[in-house]
Image 1 (cartoon, one colour):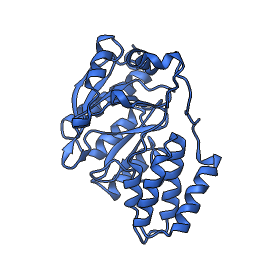
Image 2 (tube, rainbow, N blue to C red; image 1 turned 90 degrees about the vertical axis):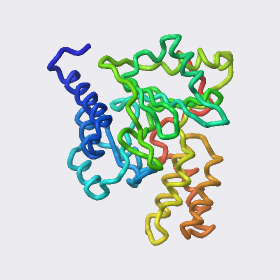
Image 3 (cartoon, rainbow, N blue to C red; image 1 turned 180 degrees about the horizontal axis):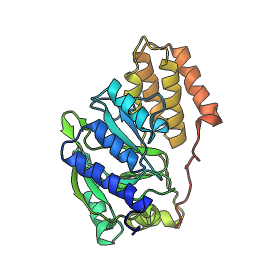
Image 4 (cartoon, rainbow, N blue to C red; image 1 turned 30 degrees about the horizontal axis):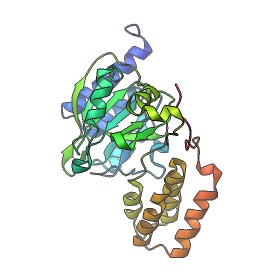
Length: 287
């Protein structure tokens, strides 16, 4: 554990204070600033939603207090998001899909194996799931669809307390002073061992929310094409081409023409520069 008074200890204390404040009713802007003082880059999402309220989403995440104050002065009701992966946290998202299933059984298996014991905080999500926070790393984000688990690390983000969706808040359920990391490859080996015998894992980011974000672009905005391009790039990066048809439908609702939509999406497919992260498609998970 870092020595008391050291920079690492101070940062951890700020993050702990941010989590505590989120559970005690502090303002969203104050919590954003506290997370930033602890070294976690933050950015705003649309009020009551998960869609980024900035042009480039988590790429705009920052620890700059002036920028953070400016964002929340402009929209005090904005939700708070944290960019995951070092210097931010890694977060295991335990989904609750109702009749379609949930990730609690898989999470409990990881817990019995000691793989998730080092979580610094457990947050209840508005949909009835959990977010488990770990020390950030350079691991890539990943997903085990059959287990209803998402791993948010490099190239991802999570909405954080005290944000709310449909009137339901993200709530801090538990926290501990000492924290460690989560070995995602070890989690994959335990839960889906067949993947270690030649089955490739798609390691990407959850981009299912992008269509609603595009649909929310104002019809009179000059940035509709830019927004569609950005969203399409994220879908291509994540290797989830099925989302592109949803993006096209969302773009039509904003008034973009078929020609504009098709050209923008094809440009996103071709443009290597729109992929700042290594595309993790068909890459075998190894220890």
